[in-house]
Length: 412
Image 1: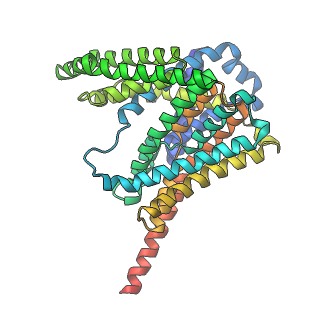
Image 2: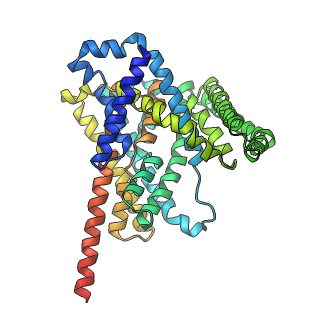
């Protein structure tokens, strides 16, 4: 049955991805939408027998396993790309740094406030703080890969606002992953002493990884790259991903965090990124990554939209996330010296979530931090905010161009 699942999911993701691209959206929007279409709330409502046959309890484990594999590959790629531009003076990082700081802090604090305020959705008191912190992280993150795709599709590569947003999103990702590591450890242990000990153990593991990588793994990987032993180099990378994911899972953190470390440590290996992208990365994005996105959708019950009880929490989270991110990024850009229109474009671009958001949500769901209703709200929130980005930026840039044209005409 898992083969039928695979065919249905990949075909649905490809079709919805093509439709999304045709209407001016990123492919990831279509892939998330495909998962929602296959969810219990939509396919299960219109064709319950078909949904039960395709995604019944007996078939969930296999789909979850492939989804987890797709997530680990995504995390490794994220680690390989998660780096600041080299050779940039500190003064040039001041503007995106201010955008990242306020663009992360404001939705993070707003998310915590909303999570603590809406009591009916809160988990037991023992896990209330990890839950609130996780809601803050989920509202504060941005998605670098999706943002890069939007900037490229809109031909904004040379635009100062786009470059600022891209660098700020990289900084935001770093802050998001750091916060995620802390909150994941806090949720697993539950008390301050145990959490501190677990965080110390993870820090020791990370230091050990750096030492082993510099002493043995990196020199060996560079030799393989120089000798053009591509298969051996990719095999080494996969082994590092598997071992690190297993180790962090045993330490009480999510396996995805472990897959991030090899990407960070191996990104300096010559040609590794290109070899990975042409082989494993290509297959992963064709087959495994759609499984991850669709699995996130199939685990989402959007039945909260049918009633009124959860509309208020959803609207509160949406406003806190969108307005907090836009307001923080806009304020940071203005304080950094950008004009109001460029600062608005930065604020809109920073609201791109997509991939990063779904990874964070998957970690929260699997760790038992996010209740199903809140998980569903955040998936819909990620879909809406990411889908809004490209059309709103198009409107803002065209409006800015019209204003500039009028100004130059009146000046003449």
